[in-house]
Length: 256
Image 1 (cartoon, one colour):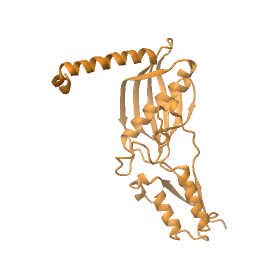
Image 2 (tube, helix red, strand yellow):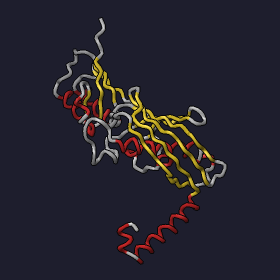
Image 3 (cartoon, helix red, strand yellow):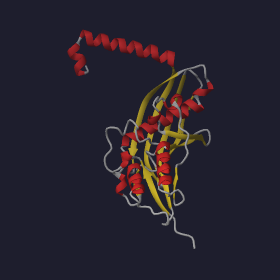
Image 4 (tube, one colour):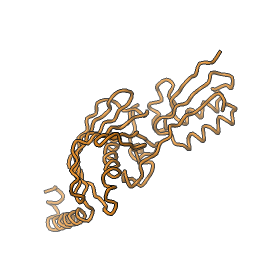
């Protein structure tokens, strides 16, 4: 007679607040349980499902400990493979700060991806309370999503050009808590004006889904300018701001 499989969820140590849930453990908690003899070789088979904040190096460390304890047959760990969008798409040099994984196209207006959250993501280093993931993660994931979609499926048509992205408006409605579990991102283009390759203008709706619910909806309007054009304008405005401050330092401090 086959034994019942017992499944647990594994999250990164940053999400210890979420580990109050039954059958949810952080990487450190799981290692303590393995080393403490909680799992006996003859017990019920265990499947560990990796969620947010779990790196490949964490899985390697856990697998090595399972082998050391003779538990490799009883306890299995599953890490969902993912391909992160690179720095050229999400505009993040540090891999831990990239949030977009497995980007794909459905049709001309609809795109999808997975939300991937590293344990050492910049948004988690100084603020992570309670069980849910802070709202700025949803905002930043939406920002990276519009960059990744535009870079891969639009800007790539003009590889000789370098684009500078300017957000015109960005509004996020937070509809449900987002927890450190698997999540998907849906990107729907509502406007695309791409006749002039020096100025690509877009509007889009970006939804993050988890556990059958929409966690957030971001509506964004932005333009990708040819970098040479916008950098000249930016430099001119920066120079004017410096001159204004030097002429009227008190007015500059008050924002006038």
